[in-house]
Length: 197
Image (cartoon, rainbow, N blue to C red):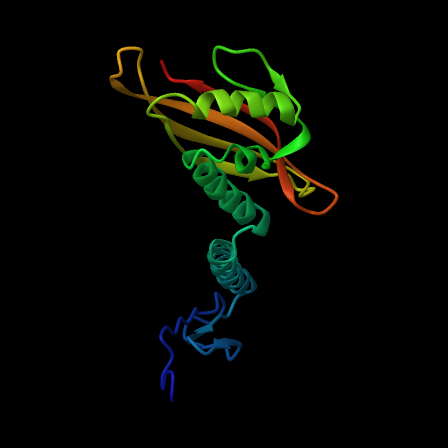
């Protein structure tokens, strides 16, 4: 396969002292060739080529980053998915297992719950509501450069029956702080959630 039989571009610059002469100095690449005669023109050409190279490198790095996402971020996204499924199925034990032993939960219209036992009571009460249904998912996850802490921002939708038995839907938002444990597993150490209204 032959790329090019002729240069794509061919720029010649006359010498200030000899307008009719063509200097033999030449910079060639597969994509084309550039002919320069004066040092200033040569440097300008080199700077242009270097600038294009930097832009191409940045674009390639950006594509590589998108195709190879942060593994810790991906792990937390999967935890969010599993956590939401556990809550939706009213599996209190599974739901509480995503918290660290010393974690704290900050439910709306309720005191802080610290430790798994108090957090269990929060979820036991929540899942016992008539018509209960809960789903949540992240909108942003940031992992620290140290790869041992992360925060997770997202939204949730809670469905439950009101005192008259009518189905209601409440939307809200949350912030979860994750900490990597000694066994390299991520667990929630702070869970803050409240309704939009």
